[in-house]
Length: 395
Ligand SMILES: *Cc1c(COP(=O)(O)O)cnc(C)c1O
Image (cartoon, rainbow, N blue to C red; front, side, top):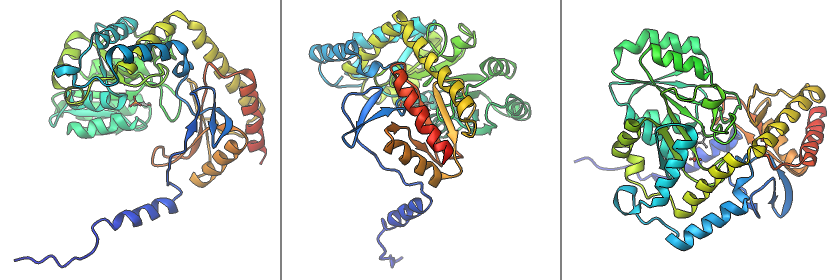
């Protein structure tokens, strides 16, 4: 008989693990944002200019979204009370899916309870043990974990490096049944874009599926704001697009769009869609309203890009020492020596009334300050940011 001699507390490793995290300056904790979402928010009761939000078009505080959410809640209730296939499906869900499909000019769409769930459910439904996933090294956590969950063989290719991707496919594609390329469209912690046309060509050449994560492209890129696919002139080409309802759309939830058979397959095989509660009426109605506004009010997107161009140009002229990472989106990052430095600068910005977070490993390989621009920022907000960045630059 084996005796269990070890009287150690099985949970004691948690404390030592936290100590290690603290030592590296990798420790994270939440801070409360108070008041209405928007271009300015309250932190510790003090107003700061918000450069930390994914609400690119300022829709999260739009009265029409709020009214739609209230109305849906009053008519249908707070919770959807069941999964889509059992008791949770409402007409409103289908209406939103139709609106997404028609906006993106794809045959069909399906909504998930979050973008994260959309990625893990879709990837794990599409590939398995006999298959190959090729993943950009800077992909979002939800893409990476979807690939791991699928059990497929995973190759990480160098960031946006088409030659490297090609090389791996040339060497390995024939060893596997199905193959799936996964990539962010706008890289969430960098702000640059994936080379979509080249990726689509490679996918065709090597008989691979392509899943494009439009979390930060939706509502932001392209003439109609549908995302990176439209921006690159690839509308209508066969691929799998996912996105979130929680960023430019100001709500909560995720979506996948593509062919009729793809969406039908996901409704039958994506566990994170089948076995979870349907999106709440409030979130569904808010997202549906947001898509209407984005289509009717292109001036929001124009304002956003106007701000982005102004900031980029002025930073390059006035603050050449700031190491701005390459960006083609409203996400602007500048690199710092290490996590300690990034935290220091983040604190300095906050003390100066600028809310822009330090992003550190393990989220990204190198520490940085991440600024995200909103259409609803005022010129004075941008000027204040530039002044404070100048102080950082001269320190
Ligand atoms: C935010 C994000 C997600 C997850 O979306 P949620 O709706 O917030 O779960 C997925 N992919 C990328 C690239 C993201 O930035």
